[in-house]
Image (cartoon, rainbow, N blue to C red; front, side, top):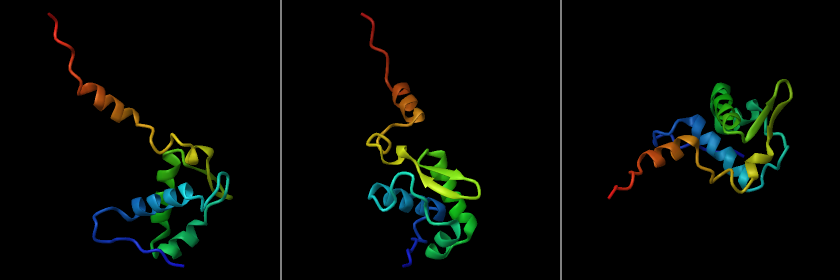
Length: 107
């Protein structure tokens, strides 16, 4: 099986891979606590350098969707499939939204 990346979209390859992995988790392809394919297998699957895959997995670790265990692999966290994890606003978006509100006029 080979997955293809869209090269002309301007979206970096590692983000496309990160989105693909997230989608596979949400669809149930990878269960909670299940080990993801190795960096080597993913780089073969997408025909990219292993560093690109490493960056995609690091993106998921930062988002709390994956946990890395040195020398063992990367595993899906329970947070990855919680109903609120995909819809929870980030702190920045909450701050941006609150900053755009104006104070009520005083009479």
